[in-house]
Image 1 (cartoon, one colour):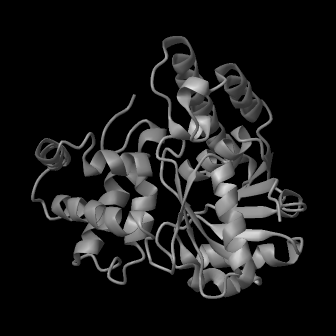
Image 2: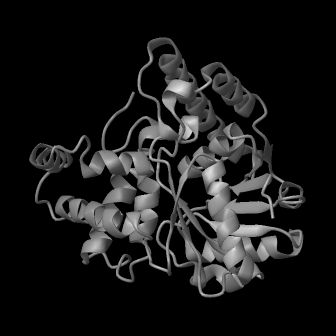
Length: 313
């Protein structure tokens, strides 16, 4: 099966990136959002992405500087046709398509990528809504950061055509796509999705079996959680924790700068999956309260909002 028509469900940080990169790679892309208000919130994200792609491609063309792997589909920078790539970026932006009617959004989809909030019940409810609307051919992938596909598979109504496809943030630069099936995933579906990931400019990372957090988040989430626990326990402030990590390891970013890139909403949703997150005396409870009251309720959701743990205005 060849994938050409792709529907992205969700217009958040990663949903917007996945949709734009797919369109940039030449796929026919529809972004499904629940309301016009959701579209208005998503549009600035796509405009920002377009500016990033334009600026980096133009600099590579005129100055011969470095260029992100995803922008040249893992090719040779010296052989890249930057005029053609700039045209692709413009076309992706000009023809970016939103849809609030789910049936219309998936009517001819070869692949639906779910990129909703990290809330299992919400994902299951969406898949239940999706079931009667999909063509028989359609593959479903979840971009869930931490959930096993086997937890969600039955809710899709087509477990053999369901798997996880997880992207790192800033997908044009950190261009991996972790492909993870569950025991019931059709092997041909797995390979089709891995091939699709390569065609959209990613480097497919094929997992041999299920693992909560995949490869990347199995390492990243404990690291970020440790930093947040230091903050919630009052051990040190954000800047001190980040400086400690950066100076000691030579890393370009500390954990709270990474959280701003990932999005504080995602961090909060992950914490809320812990059983003790509603207990205000537990560490997870303290952290959930801190993130919600001091950041989310103030509109400080990270880089895309212009402010998170740091200000980007």
